[in-house]
Length: 178
Image (cartoon, rainbow, N blue to C red; front, top):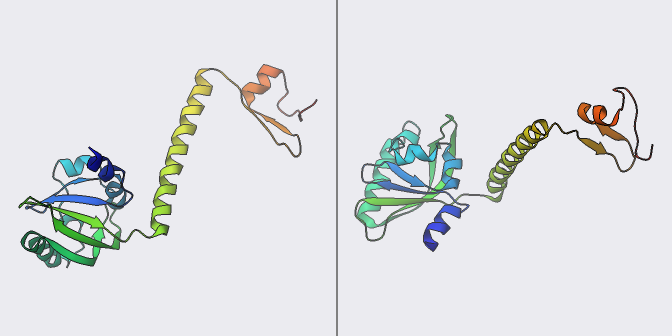
């Protein structure tokens, strides 16, 4: 179970693939890197060919063959096509899964701090947007009002509902202490 947790929580993308060159499993970092939903991997819709730019098919075929024959392929630059059509480059290493003759795994090595920060910021921004949507829904459902106080100017900014609750006119200026 610890190995599964390490795989799932790894900040580096990891992919598992079969002898037919179908990528069949990845972690959250792999989903983020390529942009395909996890179900697409489980359903066998993602192949090395489908994510390799035109002209790279031979390299992919050689890579898979060498991984199965030799056990591993030294790290190399790999061009890939994301689900949104963008082409990018990274460094990967591929190997056969130990004890298996028909399953390989690939590790993305080139996860520069900048790329990791950008990915984590995107996740945080999406989480914040989701929480804001939930908060707005709760405020509306509870028929609540909100207010914001600027501690420097002591200016109080109220939502329309707060203005109604406290009897404040729409154009009336308010400050804390009035």
